[in-house]
Structure formats: structure tokens, C-alpha cells
Length: 402
Image 1 (cartoon, helix red, strand yellow):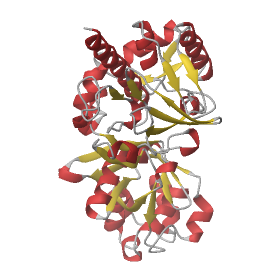
Image 2 (cartoon, helix red, strand yellow):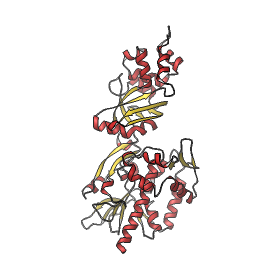
Image 3 (cartoon, rainbow, N blue to C red):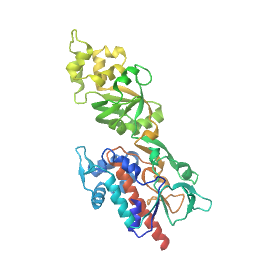
């Protein structure tokens, strides 16, 4: 995106990529249907970026969801709004959009250099690249780094750039997993899931639930949705949405207990009354299934996570059904995460996204210190940062000419 802004501004652009082809993570994002952006109103859209909403908002005002859809249309890719408000190409694929984009960039004069891994600067200040033909050194009037975060190493985002910038005095926040799963501790095993639970339910979704979590500084997360049981814990959209606050609490407190509402469509008084109804000779499992529709993985989660005395108390069980405590012990490794938090802090950058510590060097994309939930927010902000960084480079080059 930055290359396109610069090429349209009359600048000769050389784009270097460590991988054999460009846009590999972009293509992966389209594997299940390319979620380009989201259709919600601008104000709640911006709030998705949490603590970094202010700097992201300034970028989105230049290139936001509306501009992104128009840009795709300009490449011959029409979009539609799904039932969840997410925006997709009509064919749900990333490859046609990327092919059209690269073709246009080449027509605009952008030169692509594959299998060029950036190793930093040499003693004379030239860029140092590792290539199949050996080391290569290059000098440019301006440099724009879009090196990704720390997730999906096999696609090139390995975070190897962090020490390269830190040694030049750039303030870089540690890369952390975001939109990730978590390991759990269960009452039954006092560690991860019990073997009985894991063997029966790993891979199964837990649908129509809500998650509540009291984060740092009293901030409360509360959202309905679904998640998936894994071998070691939980993952899925509802878990990803809460991953930032949960991860931060684990770092600060060493523990994080979320509450799962197994019946968000029913209020607490209804649940209490149904659980308290006499069940005669029926088993508790049959009682919960017939009165509340709780069976399968939901019923097993109650047994897995609650002490026996709670299961034997109608009043305590009713409370737990509406607020089932789930202890999350650690995020899954960053390479398993959809995205990463941390990166070059905005305080280390100018408004044009140039490094304060190195004149003429700019940064954009996921290597900046921000995070957002899935739903088109990640891709939109990455694109917007590319536009803003490209504009920043143009302004820098024009000042040099003046």
C-alpha cells in the first residue's frame, strides 16, 4: 500500500521481500474468506483499537473502511457486507485481488526483489540484504520498513527485526501473542483438561455463550459468541476477542479467571428456578437437559470446572451456569497467534511514521505497537498505516528537494 502511494507520487520504489513471493500472510488471511474490513460506524470501529485508538484513528481518517472498499473496487473486486457486518470480496478470495494489485504496481514502475532478507545496516549506513547470491548492500533516499509482527514465522513474520532496531535506539515494546488461544486449569485435573474431557471434546465448539472478564484498571470485557475446546485449553472468536485484556492480566497478576455464561439468553432468576425444581429419580444430567437444554460439552464443562459440592447445590450450580469460572493459565505461543501486540512504539515515531532515532527510516503495519480483534480491523489498520507512511515518505523527500 505504501509502495502504491509512493509510485503514484512519482517516486521510484524498490520493494524487497524475504519470501519467494509477496503477500503470503495476505493470502492466508483469505483462506477462509478474505475479511477486508468492517461496516460498523466509525466511532465504535476506532474503539476496537483500545489503548492505541488515538494514533490509529488519525490514520483511519485518511484511509478507512470506505476508502478500502473503494480501493478494492478500483482493482475490479466488488465487496459485500456479511450478516456479521464484516466486509468481504464477492468471491471471498484474496488471490484475485493480490494478482490485480501486483500487476498494477508493476505497471506503476515498482520493482520487486524476492528472497532478500533484511539484516540491518552495515557500518557505512547501507541496507544489508541476505540473498541467494550472497550479501547485497543498497542505499536509498528513504527506507520504509513493513516487517510484520511475531506470529506465523513460516510466512516471514518472525520478529527478527526487533534487536536490529533496538540497537539503533528505537523504543520497541516486546512482541506478544494477540488473537490467541489459552491453556486452562480445570478443577478435575488441577492442571489442563482431564484426559476424559480432552479425548471427548477437543475440537468441539461451545456455542451460544457469553464471556465476561474484569481486566486491569477495572475494565470489563463482556461479549457473546462461541469458542472451541482444544487439547490444552480454549481458542476461537470469543477467546480471541478477549485475548488482549486476559494476556495483560496474566502478565500483571499471574492469573486470569474468565466467567462463561452458558445460557446468556436466560436471566439468573429463570435458571435458578429451573435448577431448583424437584427432579425426583432423574439424574442431574437429565434434569439440566430437560429444564435448561444443557448437555454435551456444556454439561461436561460444569463437571470439569466445578467442585462436587457446587454440583450438589442447586443454588450454587445455578450461579455457576450463569458465571462458570474458567482459569486461563497462559496464552498459546506467539507463532500460533493470529496476530501480535507490541512493536515500535508510536512515541518513537513522528506523525509521518518516521523513526525519531533515524531520519529517513519509516515503519508501518503490524510492526507498530497496536493490536485489534479479528473482523477486518487488523487488515484495515495495516492498509491505513501503509498509506500514512507512504505519505510521510513523500513529505520527507519533498523537504529534501526544497
